Amino acid sequence: MKKIAIIGCNSFLAKHLIEKVIGEYGLFLYGRTCQTSYLNKKEVVFIPFNYPETPLQLDNLLEYDTIIYTAAAGVQSDKNEPSLITYQINFYLPLQIVDFLNKNNYPGKLITFGSYFEIGDNDQIKAFDETEIIYASGKVPNIYCDSKRLLSRYYSNRQFEINWFHLMVPSLYGPGENENRLIPYIINGLKNNLVLKLSSGEQVRHYLYVSDLVDFISDIIESTITADLFNVVGDDQPIKIKNLVAMIYEMMGIKQPIIDQVKTRDQHMAYLSIDSNKIKKIGWQPKFRLTEGLKQYLNNSISNKIKHIERKKIEDSRGWFLKVINGFEDGLPNYTGEVYLTNAFPGEAKGGHYHEKANEWFTLLEGECELKLVDVVTGEKLSLELSSKTPNTIYVPHHIAHVFINQGSVNFTLMAYSDQLYSPEDTIMFQDF
Image (tube, rainbow, N blue to C red; front, side, top):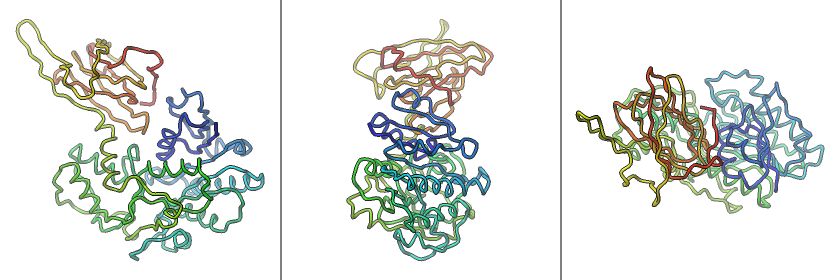
């Protein structure tokens, strides 16, 4: 079994990559923390990594067939990470790794990532090829882009002999990405009837669905592709942000209103587009164009996976009647699983786990509670307030961790139906709510 190291295992890209390859390889995950679901796998090893407090042990890297460096600093502007740390993680540490591997004649593969934001300020209507991105001189908006540019320019000097792949990536999107980024910001805002704050949308951008990038990384691991610098892009044509926004409104069946415009920090980068001819020559094509990617994104978001089914509570002098499963719900199997009741005292919680196979339907019969949900595949989170006064059945599919917390002053009673008989192996404890 090949050994794959992923340095920065909590990144958006890393989480999707892990889900793609887990079980196929021995995975060595470097990060501040590691998802509990990964640690339960015998082929996964977690190595604490929190630069500079917990540095990398470079000698260990020689044991791996492929090293994938997904660690990054300064990606999220609201975190205000120190400038020096950003340069160290995005440029100096990868440089150290390359130098060490090169001196030790490392026979495996190294994969790092650049960004088309390295182009900087640009109003030329053109797609930049790999070399043009390397030598672009437009002003970049932040030190994240500057540090990425330094690594890409070092790569272009070719002062190394190892099999090093450097992948230039446009705007990456997909389930589980940071909720403050454009696509999830719009989708979540529309679902929650929020007033959106958007720019004029005249900027032009290229997009790449995360699973397409993951597929190309998988190809690198398994194939004999010659190590090189590649632009990895989805659609051949970029899109204006305002047209992307309109596309999302249309897909969600919502009429787009006229809203006040705000200024964004990237408006001087009027046109960012990258050329994909080089990667096409080795036979690679994306599976998801932007329209297909957005549909996949919407279908795979946690709020779409969770279904609310309105119920009618019938009351009379004797009490009340509530049917929680009528046999016509989507996803029901053709056999009987389990139906059960659970009760929690005030301040207590029930659940705190997820299932590999079982899907469940929950209905709160008495009391109130908070239901916290986490998609263990993407890391996406959702919180729901439940009350027996407004009966709902909540469908929770497998791979969605869930916990019911009694924050009221009386006991709550919860009825549940599972489409699988209870199995300890299928019940995996989870704490990262």
